[in-house]
Each structure stands twice: as structure tokens, then as C-alpha cells.
Amino acid sequence: EPEVTQTPSHQVTQMGQEVILRCVPISNHLYFYWYRQILGQKVEFLVSFYNNEISEKSEIFDDQFSVERPDGSNFTLKIRSTKLEDSAMYFCASNLDSWSGQYFGPGTRLTVT
Amino acid sequence: GIQVEQSPPDLILQEGANSTLRCNFSDSVNNLQWFHQNPWGQLINLFYIPSGTKQNGRLSATTVATERYSLLYISSSQTTDSGVYFCAVSNAGNNRKLIWGLGTSLAVNP
Image 1 (cartoon, chains in turn brown, yellow):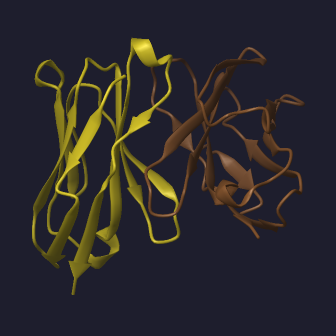
Image 2 (cartoon, rainbow over the protein chains, first blue to last red):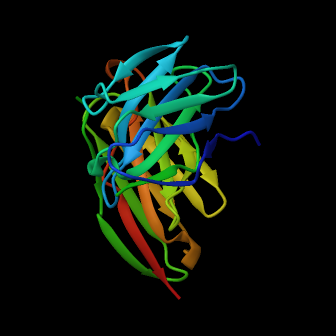
């Protein structure tokens, strides 16, 4: 069964550094998402992406964040200058059309020190 | 925006017991998904169930969209069922993003 993959599984970075989290959505899917989960809390929506542009972003997704689909397979989340409060699990998801179930990757655990 | 409430927040079972987890939502939905978050933090897709009933092995789910709730049934629980169970929904007003409940933390003891 096709699956969403994410790399790296765990990233440790120092405050102020830039990080890029990578995702490979399921190949025929058209909608892409990033969510995050701070330890012990619920999952929160960050951004959705369709047709090579952001379709919606949350209040969390400020100017420090950006997303890109640099080629036909990858979908990346960049955090320009990480803060301690960016420490969280980041999940990528995709779906075929807007109302079908979303498929989630295994997540990247980001630790900012 | 739409609100999602899950109950109970915590549940402890003996291996072999059955349980029912509930998800209430405050508006009509066109997507409802149940997930299991394992001890490694991974989100495992259990069901895509905006309405109706589905079964997968020892798990089944029912969504009554008109009454704005969904139930997840776990039968003959096993220690590997431990973890957090999340309900997440979306509707037309959310532009497809999933809104998540706080989850039910399940511990199954041997």
C-alpha cells in the first residue's frame, strides 16, 4: 500500500538555525498538508497546499514558516529561524481529493535547543 | 469554528475487555477520521468514516452524522492497543483542514 514518507525522523537543531523538513506524499495525491503536535497536546493544522500554492494557513504559520513543492514528488516545510517553542512532532499528510481521507506520514520530531 | 470533543480522556482496561470511545462534533462534517497514535508518536489511520459503520478486525466505528457523533469500538483489547486515539473532522467551512480532538489515552494492562 502506498504511504507518505518523511525525513528525517528526528532532527535536533539550535535556536536560530534554519531547518527543512521533507515529505514525499503519495504519488497521485493532489492536496498536501503540514500539521504539528507539541508534546502531550493535540494535533494542530499548519498549512494546506494545492496546485502549487497555499490554500489555507493557520495563525501558527507565520513568516518564519514556508512550504514548497520543489519537484513532482517532494513537499517541504522550512522554518527559517527556529525557536524553542517550535519543538514538536511535525506531520505531513496528503489526499487525492478535497473530501477523501488524509494519509499521514510517520512524523519528524524536531527538538530545538 | 467546529469543535471536537472526545470522551473519556483516559481509559484503563484489562486485556480482553471491550471499550467504546466517543467523538462529538459541533457542526456538520464531510470528513471524519479516527487515528491511533502509538508510543513512538506515529499516527495510524484507523477509519475514514464521515457516516455509517465500518469494521476492521477487532475495531469498528460508527458515525451518526445527523446527531454529530462518532463511536470507536475496541473489542478483546490487547496491550498493543495502548496509546492515544484521536478523532479529527473537517467540513466545507474548514477548507479541508482536519480539526482534532484532545484524544482518549488508552492503557491496556496484561
